[in-house]
Image (cartoon, rainbow, N blue to C red):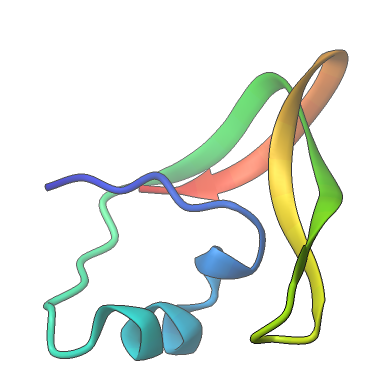
Length: 65
């Protein structure tokens, strides 16, 4: 299965914590053209903002696959 990560999910320690014993292999990284990273949600569990991506001409967001 492939998973496109952005924001704090790019952090390998955090991904291992979330995915448990699943083997994580980084395939590639790059930028999503036409998207920007926004913090428009709130996590009660983490007691903080959560990230999302939104369409935005002229913007780009880093990712890992």
